[in-house]
Image (tube, rainbow over all chains, first blue to last red):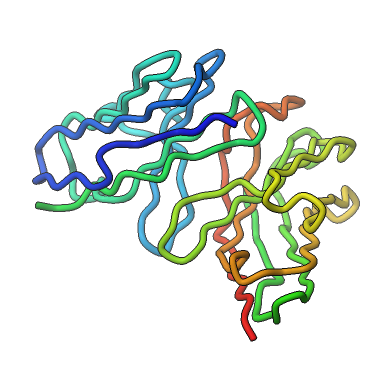
Length: 108
Length: 122
């Protein structure tokens, strides 16, 4: 099983600041089959990124993803008020599918 | 427009059973794998089962293997999750999630339902 560890657990930032979220895998994620999801309170998760660096349909370009192998990063270049949420990484290269424990981006 | 609508959640006693449904629309149902993902109150996401587009192949993590059964009915465009021998730790919101692309189980989840709450308690 691929274990995903996200850091930090909580990120306290102000609107307009840059957010950098990390996701580290216990073993290499083949083909960079790594996705990022955003979840707001009371809502279902929403796909942000897939293939580590491809934005999903309708996702603004302030969101970007990078990384390969075991180390992946989600960057939000300038935080908008609607970006404060919990973010999860997920690998879909193997079974079982696994998620990171989440990073909460909160307003400072 | 892709829509996934879960139903069937509720309160059940430990050791009991429950069947969840996920009504799908807006895409070719038999062309896409679909999974169930759960989220315990205040916790993260956990994948609990998946099924191929044709329904031939099913997948489970060890935490639910032997207790949960996933199935799909192409005549009704509906996905099911039969949950038996329920435990308190199965308490969660259960989401169905569509896999991107036709044919491959190894794909990300591009659409999610709004979830249904299952509470296991005496």
